[in-house]
Structures are given as C-alpha cells and as structure tokens.
Length: 215
Ligand code: SF4
Image 1 (cartoon, rainbow, N blue to C red):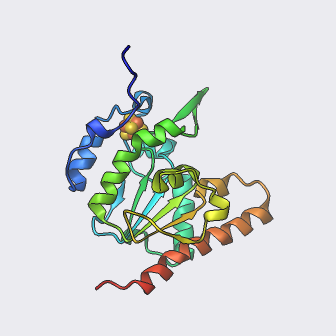
Image 2: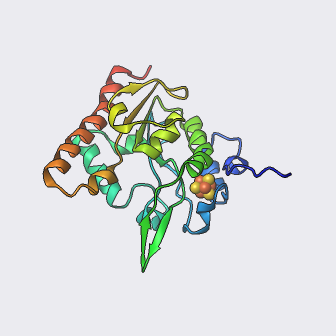
C-alpha cells in the first residue's frame, strides 16, 4: 500500500544560502495546501548579516496583499514596541514560521486561521534555510506557532517567555508573545500590562547584543 507523504516544503527549498534565490524559489512552494487560497508567498526580509531574526506566525491579510512581513496592524504594533524598546527594526531579519496566509472567508473578509502542526512543520524548511543564510546569533520567536517552529517542539509561551534559551542553530533563542495577541485584548488595563511585558521582552534583544559585541 502506498504511504501518504507528510506535507513538506523541502522539495522546493534549493541548496543555497543566497536569500534572493531562496525568496524566488519560495514563490513556487506547494509544500502544503496553504498556497492554494493565499495570494502569494510572504518571505522574510532584512539584512542578510542581521544578528537577530525575529519570527512571527504567518502573514496576515495586509501582508498577503503586499507580499511583505509585518506590514499590517500587528506589524505596526510591533514597530511601536521595537521603538519603545529602542531596537532598530532595520537591523533585524523579520520573517514568519508559515509563509502563506491561512484564513477563513467571512463575507468579503478573510479571517485569520491558526496554522496547524502539520502546516508549521511543512513550512519549517524555509525558516531553517533563512536561519542558515542569515546565521543569526539570536532568534526571537513571537507566539506559539513561531516558538514551535523555532524550538522544534511544543512550547509554553507564557512560562518560557523572557529567558534566553539554548538553540542548536544560534547562540540563543528568546520567546515572547505575538503582537496580534495584544490587539485582541479588550480590557485597557490588561492590554497596557501586556504591552509593558512585550516591550520588556523585546528590550532583551539589546541586552543580549550588548553582552555579545561583534568580534
Ligand atoms: S505555507 Fe509554507 S510549506 Fe505551505 S505552501 Fe506555503 S511556503 Fe510552502
């Protein structure tokens, strides 16, 4: 009996550390079913010598249209939080664990749907290729999807956040929440408290960079 193969981006990922070649190749990926309804692959962007990679969950509606990561409401909130933490986004490489937008249509709207474990694992070869190309010292995973992909295991974001963790592809990994989680908190006080914790976590990027100067 023929055994069904697990979904994986691996056959589409070229053996290269050239980010432009990877980005081009990712446009044709059919490693899981998510390419079928999304507009385009949204690959990471940023300096190829960035010392820090910031990983989110997946592109949202706006990212799917523009083809760039973190340009929608969550991206704007991330920009504000990075600014508050005095972290320069232009010095980071920013990407997502899953490169196609997963959504459910509701009338004219496309509502975000969380990628499942098979989709996260299918898309992981792209993240691994980005990490191999950029060779970051620190990988920051925002939210449970990113944390699962970065750590290669299930994580508990709320207990593991805010600590430098060992990682086999970088000197350290850091877990924090996804900025979209803050957008979903209705109560003002709790949103403010979570905002403070998010900025604190992002501030650890600078702390880490200062303790690990280049050369
Ligand atoms: S989500 Fe990832 S694995 Fe799935 S089709 Fe898109 S790029 Fe390929």
